[in-house]
Structure formats: structure tokens, C-alpha cells
Image (cartoon, rainbow, N blue to C red; front, side, top):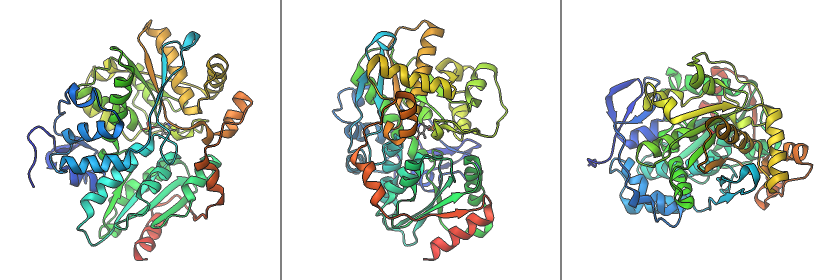
Length: 440
Ligand SMILES: *Cc1c(COP(=O)(O)O)cnc(C)c1O
């Protein structure tokens, strides 16, 4: 295999000596030493690559090759992004009062109505590309606090080289999210774990290093997989290009920090974003880390923006690797928003601009306003809208007194067959399911 000189290969955050191909980083997910894969260097992505692309798919076909080590020919990258990123990502101007220079980049127009479709669909197709000649199917383990599992299950649906086992915390996702997770799909097993999201994440991490599962080709599809992060750079280039105003900041509703890490990779490779705003809910490890150097992880607490209910953000180790010393604080400003503030913001934005934001996006909108107040910044801010409001009808009803319009794709779900098994929050229980699932 030949590698391009201008394109990186990958190493673990915990061992820079063992260099692997993009293919290997993609297929193994987590590095064998428990670290996360990072590029050996940051390629420079010239402005010409993204400036006049007319769709995200086209932009992806031009930007991703800089990162893929020359391992996927450009015409194949183009076919992959055209198939994976076949939906729109409009920039919506709020344009009223306090929201005058605030924009919403809607990332929820994919099949499962959250931004996770970008990473999951692209990663699934890249994996399928590299697995063409393999006999044994690959089993993907994925822990989800809501949107990852459905995006991953949907992204992999119909790929016969791949099986998926997805874990989610029982009773801690919205009814619609759950319906999306347990929709019956071929090759996909959904487990409702009697524990928290952090339990799910821990079980997956343990399974990867368990000797009883060593004979099964396993991979992850969480935001720890580098192939989920790379496509998540693309909409930053896209949003910046659409708005076309120098000095534009990005505000990112965050949990595991995968979305934000995508933005940081875009910035490090040349996108001139002055500041990123990390918008967290009551799970405030990262804003506290930025403000006071806080390093103590805490159990997650439940909030209205439940896809961000993460006590131990899995991409923190990667962000620390990429942004050393003062660099992290120079590039990122963070804040934490309560549930009460989230509801108030949803109502205010609706009353003042007519825009219906989901609770995750509302955390971002409130954080963007705080950043303006705190910094006196007047430049535009693009808030990433990570989910469609129809996924959270109870919260929208409570905050705005209306029902969000239900896209056809969601209403159809209630007629579909489901499949799920309740599971104890232990490695042993997960192992049994994995072993049974690969046998069939
Ligand atoms: C996953 C998710 C987030 C958090 O993204 P991270 O990459 O984990 O920081 C925010 N909002 C929604 C709707 C999500 O599904």
C-alpha cells in the first residue's frame, strides 16, 4: 500500500511510536493500549479545497483525502461522500434583537435527524470499503446516550460484512429516541442496559480488552473512532463558507466532545475560526476544566439535553493531545447551562424569532449569548443545531406550548417492528450477548 507524503497516518494518544494506517485506525476504533487514534501530523487543507464547493458531499470529497493517507482513491472518496452525505445542512439566520448575529447550522436533516448521521454514515461506508475482501464479519460495539445508536444502526443497515451491538441506558433516552434505537434492523442487536450511559461506555471499553472476546473482530462506532470525527469537520468548513464572514465563531452543544474535536481538527488544518464555544448542560466537567483546571470526573446527571449527559467525555484525552498547554483555553471557551435556562432559552428564541430549537441546540444558543456578554464579541456566531426539535416533543410542548412539526420519517417509526433485550450493567452480560450475536 502506498501512503501519500502530505497525508498523515495514525498513532495512539498514549504511544506515538506505533504508527498505523488509516484503515487500521478505522477498523479497530480504540488503540490496543486504550488510547485514542490521532493523526501523526495535521495536514494543511488549502482554502481552495473548501471555498467554492457546492455541497457538503463535494466538500467532503475534496477535504477528506488530505486525511486518509492516500489509502482511498479520490474517486472512491467522492462516491462514499455522495452516498453518505446526501442531505442538506442549511445555515439559518435568526436575525432579530439579541439574536441578530446568531446563526443556526441545522445538522439534523439526515435519516435519524441528528448530526450523528454525518459521522456514522460516512464511517459505515468507509468501513464497508475496506472490508470488501474480508470473510468474517466485523462486530461493532456502540454505547449511546441517545442519537449515536440510531445513527450507527441506520448507517450500517444493509451492510452484510458488519454486525452491530448497541447499548443504551434503559429509561434514560426519550421515547422517540428509544423507538429509533430499537427499530428492527438486520444484523443489529439493541440492549437496554440497567444503568447509566457511563456504565454502557465502560462495558464497551472492557469488552475490547477482554480475552474471551479476543477471537472476534470488534470495533467501535462511538465518537472515539477517528473516522466519525473526520466527517464532522466538514460542516464547519461548510457553515463558514456559506456565511462567508471572517471572524465567525462556532458554538458546539457538547457531551463526549466528538463534535467539538471535529471543529478543532478543521481549525488546526486551516479553517480560520477564532473561538469555539463548548456548550454543556449540567454535566460540566469540561467548562470547569477550562475555567479552573478541574480534572475530577463525576458520574453523569440526567438533563433535558440527554444526548449530552456525559460525566467522562471520551474525546477529552484526544483534545488534550491536540491542544497542549494554553492552546486549549486560547481556542475554546466553555460554559454550562441548566435545564431551567434551557427551557427559558427555547421560549425566548421562539418568541423573539419564531425559531423552534431542540433542547441541545438551546444549550448552545444560551452559551452563545453568554460568550457575547462575557467577551464583548460582535462577530457572527454559528450555533450547531445537533437534533431536530421533533425528537423532543414533551420538552418543546412544555417550553413553547406547541407541538413541533413531526417529519414523516419520525411518524413512520411507530408502525415499524422492534427488537430489544434488557441487560444487566456488567461485562459478563454484554459478553453473552456478543457471543450469541456473532454465532447466528
Ligand atoms: C451526541 C449529541 C451531542 C453531543 O455531541 P458530542 O460529540 O458527544 O459532544 C449533542 N447533541 C445531540 C443531539 C447529540 O446527539
